[in-house]
Image 1 (cartoon, rainbow, N blue to C red):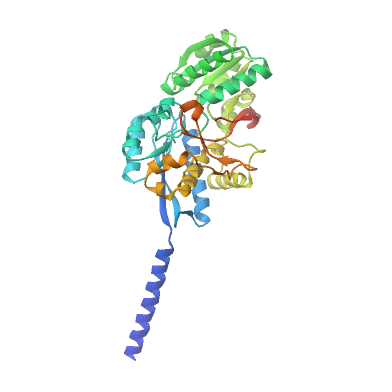
Image 2 (image 1 turned 90 degrees about the horizontal axis):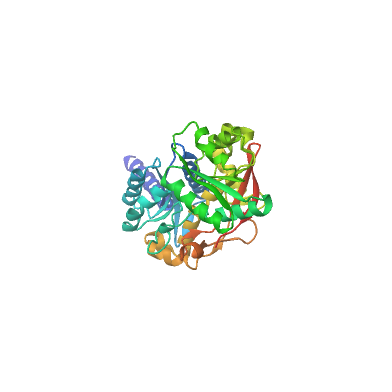
Length: 395
């Protein structure tokens, strides 16, 4: 009797152990992908869109059983770090990624942070995808940064040319926050405007990011009577304040920026005064969006209760990493292999209708392929939402 009980117990333990072993064997490996960017403060919308896009897409892929790269199936794990738009914290965030043995990181979202983390990335074999525009990050000998969106010196000329041809714009004025990121964008915007024959009537006015009264800032700019007022590198928090102040001063011309914005923030901060405001939008429109993109928007909205149009762009970088790793699985632990794969990489674009492809671009701007290819979508804000003004591409 006792022997029979012992045998049954032993058999049950063996079955249980086998079940646990099978479950352990069935569990996917983890592929850690990092995010270092701003998710608090005036520019928080940029980084929040980044992180949420990554998390929403990763959750979807994991739900489908993971991602097969070579002979191994991985679940995507997002490791996030809020750098608070502080270069020192950005460095700390990238050092954390190195400690976690993360080789692929999205962000940072601003110029200072992207430049600050370069040494850490290069020393630790990390490829990172900044949403920042300094060409020095992407021009040789730099090779570890990949621009995750369309740069202002690519979108600016397209916007100015469109407005000159379609709206009769001849005179343009620039105003920027007194920080390196927006100042750099202002300078390249001025250069681009002059290159297409526009008259720059004001390009020296700046403001502090904590400004609450923009009337004295904008008064001399408005007095220069521009047809177009460019808010260079403006943060989502400052944009509605600047727009409201300009309109209350009687400015009736066009207002634009080369940075992505948040429709809800514009509506809450400026309302109908923001109608007609132009900004670079997410890399998709209703006409371009595939069923995958539409489902991504639904899933993102369900997860977070809202959607940011900029996520149409921010969803791309994770996809590029995964598909490039599929092209050469050895790149999982070796970013030099990843770099080699970039030159000839091409894969179907799941987020666009038709036969659109994922590929790396940037030869014209950087002399090497250090930019992901996403459509350049320029939006016009109208009655609480963005409407597509035009779509273009960069090489």
